[in-house]
Amino acid sequence: MDSEKRAIHKARAVYYGLFASLFPFSFDAEYFDDLEKSVDLLGRHPLDEQSGRALKNMKRRLKNRGFLALKNENERLFYRPDTASIPTTASYFCENRDDGRKRLQMIEYLLASPFRRNSDEFKEHEDHLEFIMRFMQRLIIEELGGNANAGLLGEKVFQNVLNEMVDALIDQLREHQYSSFYRQAALVLESFIAFERVFLRVNKPREQSAVASRTHQHPGDQQAVMSRCVKMGQDSCL
Image 1 (cartoon, helix red, strand yellow):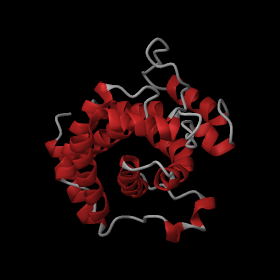
Image 2 (cartoon, one colour):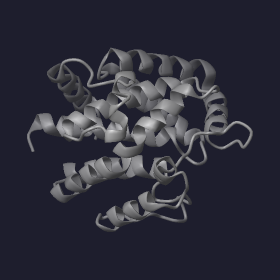
Image 3 (cartoon, helix red, strand yellow):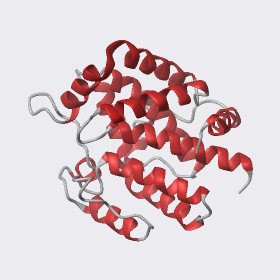
């Protein structure tokens, strides 16, 4: 693997780490600290203008509003019965119910990997948003260590699980009435997913194509985006 591709993979791992920290079942100070570090690092070399502005807004809100405000927003968006409306599993996004086919797919991918779910530490299903993002991050790091099969497995997870539901997640994060910090995070996620689709050569799902004009396409010149991603990866400590 050449140095440029290694840097891109490092940047991808940081992005997936950021998104994993955004969607925990129980948001605590450790996740907040991880978010601060990831937002600061990614903000130095954003993929495009949209994500650059969003990362600046996220950094400012983390500093000015602090942990409790973000924890409260997280609970309002995902877990409080009087306000929550955003699902947290791929099965629910794709099948309108938890514990569906996407969980079975994720279990299959997990069994094909060197990793296993630690049920003592992670109580949610394998198709929970945090688990998917963290799994993708671990597969990228494993590929950086020389395991080419981990990279191929990550491509399958992206194409068959994440790619099929992430546009709906982005829309709901942007549209929820209590979304503030997460509305900015949705812009970063949107830019990153556009990049991932180009990098992994994965098309937007067919049912999403009809609304493509409403969603963010590949951010500007591809070579410029790749260059920013390389610089960010070179700055990371992975």
